[in-house]
Image 1: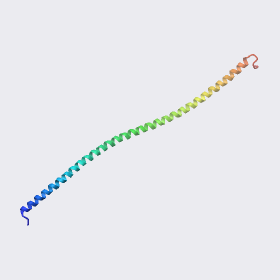
Image 2 (image 1 turned 135 degrees about the vertical axis):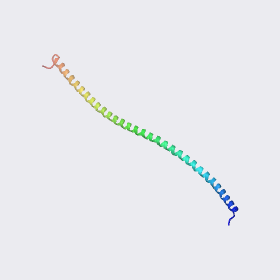
Image 3 (image 1 turned 90 degrees about the horizontal axis):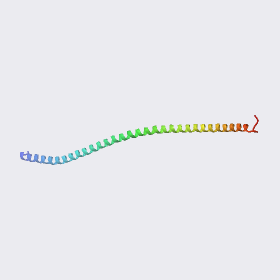
Image 4 (image 1 turned 90 degrees about the vertical axis):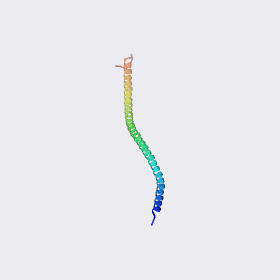
Length: 120
């Protein structure tokens, strides 16, 4: 049987070991808490960066849509320019043909009006 005194010594030793172990565990716990804070800060920074990137992605999509619209408009304008050039060339040819016919008619009239020209 244990005496009260030996039990108190044993209990004191247990308390001392518990306190020593507790100090080590407390230091580990504090380190874990600091690590948790650092990780939380990194998560928050990552979330802020993700939000910023979402905004950039949205802006990029908007710009891509605007670019596609501008490209469609540019293609439409190129087609319109090609049609107008073709029409302009056709009108120019018609004017040249009309000028040639008019020149031929004027020459024919001039020949008929000259003395000794073609008989009427």
